[in-house]
Amino acid sequence: MINSARQNHADHRDDAFPADDYIAPVPRISVQAFCETDETAATVLAAGADRRLGKAHLTVKMGGAAAAIEAYHSMPTPNVIILETHSRSDLLADLDELATVCDPGTRVVVIGSDSEVAPYRELVRRGVNDFVVGPIETLDVVRSISSLFSASETATTGRVIAVVGAKGGVGASTVAHNLAWAIARDMAMDSVVIDLDLAFGTAGLDYNQDPMQNIANAIFQPDRPDTALMERLLAKCNDRLSLLAAPATLDRVYDFGAEAFDAIFDTLRMTTPCIVLDIPHQWSGWTRRALIGADEILIVAEPDLANLRNTKNMISVLKAARPNDRPPLYCLNQVGMPKRPEIEVKEFAKTIEGKPIAVIPCDSRMFGEAANNGQMIAEISASHNTSKMFVQMAQRLTGRGDAKKPRRSFLEPIIRKLRARA
Image (cartoon, rainbow, N blue to C red; front, side, top):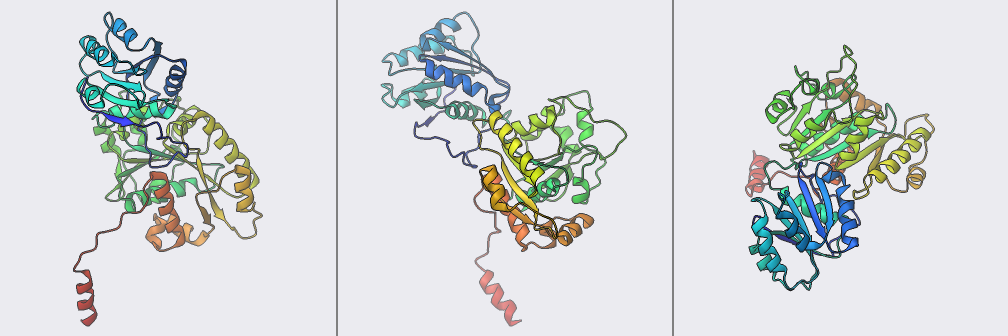
């Protein structure tokens, strides 16, 4: 057991799912909980089904600290032990005895009450890594376990944003690429765009890149991709943005199992603060897994009936699969296309039961120019309203309130005056 701790409070809840309350997925670890109440046991089991604990092996037993001490006399301890206690006067003694049977490096989380008789300082001295004040909720458990590994070198800390179209041809890739550009440039976050449309991906064209290697080099190699390999495969778009391009060739068929991209995502999470997935419009095992496993989901739709149906269906399915996450967000693209009948934005939002985070107007000339020149919208006109929309979307999806602005020198007013006189 190691001596670092923080205290959660019962009044800290995540009902509104704030974007900046980021909880990182945990690595492959073992977690064993020893509970005293059925309610706590059920909550811990529910936490084990959360996507962020998807790689953890979690088991729940009853009996509290006494059961844990008895069990570990004859079996090795896991990476994490969760103990529930109800104002037990002998908690410190139990922890002392537990320490005699714990393997080095085992982390301990105690679930107690605000009237716990043991001073928090004494819990820390005995190696308690976290003290969670009950009654607990599912996210309290997920957050506590995640925090134990967030500072670890092996932790997966990068935020993954998945962008997918509600229908083919709605401009989801264009939105994904401009969004990633805004995250890297305006939010000052090192980012990677992964083009997952292996046969027809356009990220290389949009960023004016023609990399010699691409994501296929990682998928089809026999060994698990490591950080060094991924660095070699990335094409540099600017100082903070890199691209893992698609081969965009038809010389082979790209059929994948559900877990085909897991190793790539996990490896990039270790080194990259933000990863934007450009997911093609298809429904398969791996696309569904990529969406469910993302930290944020953005659905791009156009204002017509098919997009409305598909958006509603996708949000419903993904909400059910991610009960502890914020619901998927959506934006409307190419709104106001001349001579095209459209569903009004307010009617679209009424049916979805939520407003879009952006309504991007149709501007065929500007988007066409950007696509043909291999440029982002901000490169054509940084002051254009659409460019500002992408920055606002970047802020919302990364949990950053304001874009990073260059620091102004205190000499700038004087320099400006001197230039004016010249």
